[in-house]
Length: 382
Image (cartoon, rainbow, N blue to C red; front, side):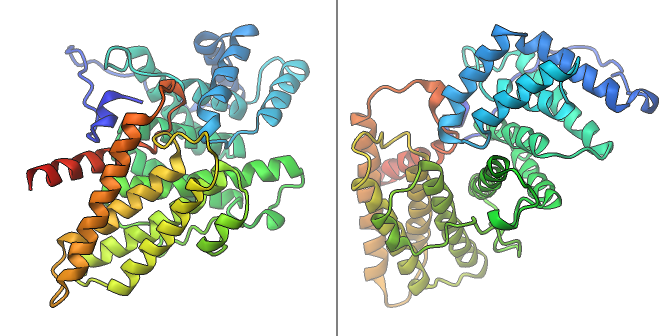
């Protein structure tokens, strides 16, 4: 996670000045599946390495990014990797692309700068995705690679790239049919079907988060529903069941989506729906209570679902506290008081949170921290 991201501003890495020169343009005759497969395999060997180096790179990914964004099955990935090594001279293009994207998303800035090698790797992978797309190649592994590229863009505040990538991921997933309920997927292998479902969840989560960061209306408001399969229970029921962290994150993104629709309608139509706001805050409060009653080892500043809930609440409270509501100053004051309490809670968490390895932190954390910091400044100033 970059320092620029923590400040919630777009990254502006300075490129070295140089004289303009022509870039190589690929010849269509050279763009054959075998050539592309061979090139991607060579890139894996050059950038990631072979044998033990490849295993170490995969282990780093599954120890860090995978802990908060588990879209790639470690078991399925290792089986595919072993099978490809045994059965053929080169790995399939989609598996090589996924391997490279897994390596990319683990890379961090050095002294506040993104190394040229990392920028080049990112640009190359975007180009490979476009080439595979132009050749009509699509698969779950390619989609997972694309989604990890989007995570990299979010983590380095690459907007509007992240916003556009997310939209492309949605259509790519729909073309594969993985947006259907798990039992309706066209994938016979149960493990791969579950992996596809996790990938679709990841797409819905990123779609909502980039809408939040980019200040745009969420997808549901634009007429593209992104319901998360199997997570449509009432918010009050979450305190009664034990679910994994990614399922919680998916549900938190649904609540964020509702909050973003409310904020967008309020701001674009100058129409404040108090009943809707209260219902959203009630749902968020109920869901936040599940964290208090859950894992005692939870790090309050490193949990993605908790961060999205806080972002949703901050956005809802902020628009409520700044919207003129005739003859209803009580509602405005209540919003401000809850907002102050939430800001204090986040600040308190920052003071008491134990040290955490930076590589394991989610890209979905900075927004609520930034909004809380700005809210703290506003409270202090006024």
